[in-house]
Image 1 (cartoon, helix red, strand yellow):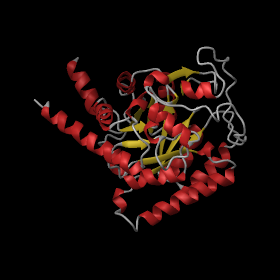
Image 2 (image 1 turned 60 degrees about the vertical axis):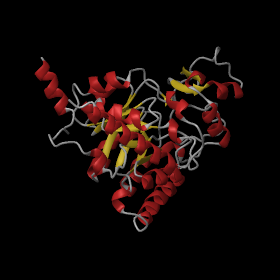
Image 3 (image 1 turned 180 degrees about the horizontal axis):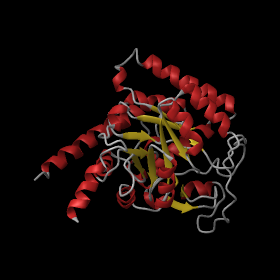
Image 4 (image 1 turned 30 degrees about the vertical axis):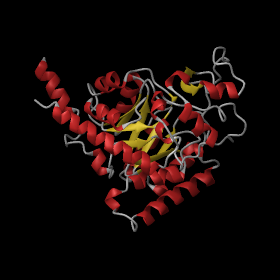
Length: 339
C-alpha cells in the first residue's frame, strides 16, 4: 500500500509521456506563478509586466471587446515582449497566456480561435466549458492547453478531452470560485492525471506557492494579489478597497453572474446590494460579442481569501520580487526538515 502511494507520488512529477515535468523552466519562470486571468482587471500592461518580471502573464479574451480590440491587445503583447528581448535576457521573460471562454453562450469563440492561431500564445486556458474547441488549434502550433476546472468531475472530463493541464480552482479563489481544499483537489487529481497541474485559491505569498508545489502542483494561480498593482486595469477605488480588506469582507454568491463567485461586501453595498439579502442567481451568459455596458457585475468587485496579504498598491515587479524571497525562504525551510 505504501509503495503504491510512493510510486503515485513519483509519477505526479512526470508528464503523460513519462518525462519529468519542468513546466516552470519551459516557460522561463523565476517563480512558479501565473498572474491569473482576471475579468476586467488583466490587460496588456499587466500581462507584459508579469512576463518581464519572470512569471506567466495571463488575461481573459472577454476583457477585449469587440474582437478588433482583442486583435490589438494580442499584437501589442507580442510586440512588447519581442522588444523586451533586447532589454533583458530572453530566458528571464515568462510566457504569456490567453484565457478563452468555451461556454456554449459565447458566440465569439470562433473569432477568438482565429486570433489564437495568428498570435500563438504559448499557454491557453479554457474556462466555463470543454477545452475541445481549443485543443486542435493550440496544440497544432505547439502551445499548451490548460482547462480551468472547479470539481473532480470537470477535471476528469477535461483530462479525457485531451487537455495538457488542469487549473484546479479551489476554495478561497477570487471571482468564480471552487469549493475543494487545494491539497484535497490536487491530491485527488494526481490519482488519475499526470499532466500539468495549476492550483489557485487563497494563495498570496511565496510560502503558499511552496506548499502548493509540495503537494503536487506545477504552477500556482495568483489573482487577487495582482489586482492592486500599478499595471492592472482595476479602478483606484478597487485597489484601495483591497488594501483595506480582510477575508472577513468576502461573500461567496451566485447572485451576480449565475456562478458562485467571491465578492467584496463593501463593493456589494456600494452598488445598492444587501450582502444578507441578495437576489436570485441570473441565467448564465458569457457571450464576448455582447457589450459590457451597464451589466450589474461590471461595478461589483471580487477578491479571494488571500486578500489579507495585500498591504499597498505596488508594481508587478515589486510583488514578484517579494514572492521570490518568500519562495526561496520556504525552500530553505524544507531543507531544514530533511531527514
